Structures are given as structure tokens and as C-alpha cells.
Image: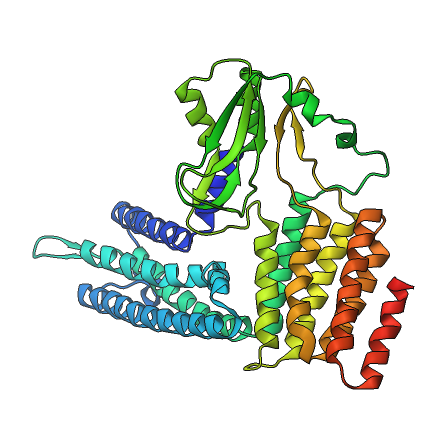
Length: 435
């Protein structure tokens, strides 16, 4: 079930999914309405004659005009989208192109124009004008006119959306919202004050119970996108075994690379081992499904480009820091999943590599700190961000990680800040953590 959900989310995230659905709907709609037109007779009274076409030539002219206009506008929409993608790639980084491509409005607009074009073609083909038989799908043509009006409105909304989506604050806000939702999915619970369960586990003793050790190797090269842990636990429990994983989603694998060790006392058939390997989704690119670091890297990349000498935009970098602060403040109070996974009978089945607060803090702020030496304002904001995160931190290991980063920021400031007053501002803020 978990794997099917991953496949479904992956399918919905593709750029072509929504346009294809809209196109299929338009084809079915045209067939249904043409059939309905053949079953009913629309009276040509004083009111209906203003809305329904009664001449075959007029019907063909209307449909031909709409279909031609829709394809012309569709080309314009494609051109605008490509220009937006080019600007986004050069200013914010090529990895953000997917964010623009997967905007639902862009997909709906492209699908609407192409589907309207196909709808008009199908309805146009249904018009009959013979000596002994005349068929005009008046209702279908009326729907085509309303679709054209709707597409004009969509074009205005689309242009407005493109103009808004290229603003740095909007891009940062969208990424921050996505990261916030992702963290709440991956870390839904608050940290517990009680002693962690994993502290009582003797891994060496658990491994010593098994006599056989089988190497699990990557079937191909690529990025580990997803691990179906529920199916893994079920399969491993059937063979009363224990799996130790060395990689987590987001890591790069090489064909034949060892990604885990399977400890067992029973014999594993080839099909059973292949079933275990099939629970690892390996693709050509990283995904954010189970990889929080990938989403954080997108925000960090915007900040790094803003701090580059060619752009030199500290305000964008500060906006990225502010949004990362909100994410890390939530993670400071979140309960991180244990690396020990158990089956229903409370038997240890999987030892996995998991995220840690210190590691995510490094991903969020290390590179920004390294690039911020020429911008005192960014370093001061970094220190303020760490002060805020420290207020939410209760775990001692987490506090040590925050203190470590505050020390590194202060050291960079002492080496690079020449103005005494700016350095004093940084020192005053550092004292709140390092006192």
C-alpha cells in the first residue's frame, strides 16, 4: 500500500498528468454531447436562436475559429512558460525548474487549450450537411463557445501567475510551505521527555543471534528515491531475519554497491532476495518524497546564488534564512524516528540510517555561512536565526549543535568583518547563546 501511494504521488507530480486527464475528459465530453445532440431537438424560438447555431456553415466557421485560436494561444502559453523556466533557471538554479513545471495552474492552462482544440475538431467532424440529412450539434457548439470564454479568462490568470511566480519572495514562500508540510509528514510527533527506546537496544547482541550474512547490493546506478519499509519488515519477518541498511533516501548508489547486510539463520531463495531489492526505488534524479535534505537544498541554493558576487542580493539570502529558521525551530521540538524498526511481535527487523537534527542543521546553514563572509548583515541574521532555534531546543544534543553553529558563525565574522560596530553587533547576539 505504501509503495502504491508513492507511485501515485510520483505520477501526480509529472508535468503531463493533468493535461492528459483534461484532454481525455474533453474527448469523452465531445462524444457525449454529440450523442445528446442526436437525441434531442432544440426549438428555434425567439430566445434560443440567439444561443444555438442553425446553419451548418456558421457551425463550421465557429468551430474552426475557436480551434485555430486555441492552438495559437497554446503556442503563446508554451513560449511564455519556456521564458519563465529560462529566467528561473538562470536566477534561482536549474533544480527549481521542476517547481515551475509542476504548478497545477500551468498544467491546467496548457491542457485546457489543447483539449479545447481537440474538442472543436471532433465536434466539427460530426457536422453533416447532405441533401437528405442535416445534423448540427448545437449544444456541443454552445459548450465550445463557453470553453473559449473560459480559456480567455485562464490566459489572464496564467499571465498574472507567471508574473507573480518569478518573484524571489514568492518562490521562497512556496518552497518554505512545501518544506513545512513535508516536515510535518515525516516528523509528526513532538519529542518525548522519556528515555529513548533505542538506548536500551544492544545491536551487537542482536546481530550475534544470526549465523548467515547476505550482502544486499544495488541493482543499478542512481539515486535512492524511496524505501518501502512496511513491505521490507513483512518480508524479513517471514524469514526471521534482520536487515542493516547503510543508505537512506537521497543517497547516490552505484551498480553493485553494498546498500545493506541481511542477517539470517535460514536460507534465502533468489526470488525472496529480489523481493527485498524491489522495495528500493532507484531513479535518475532525487525526489523529496522521503528526502527532507533535497527540499532544504533548494532553499539553500537560492541563498547561495543571492550571495554570489554576480547577483549580490543579501535580502534574498536573509529571506531564505528566515524560512529555514521556521523549519529548524519545528524540527528542534520534533521527535525524530528511531533507526530501529520492529515488527508486530516487537522483534528488531531493520536498522536504518535516519535523519538527525544536527545533520539537518548542517545542511541548512553550513553553506550559507561559508558564503556569507562578505555580508555582515547575513551573518548577523544567521546568528539571530540560531538564537531563535535555540529557544525551541530542549534536547541537549540539539543545543550542542546550535552552539557549534553559533561558534562557527562568530569565527567567520571575526575573520571577515572589518567594521568594529558590525562585529560588536554580532558579538552581542552571540553572547545570548555562548554566554
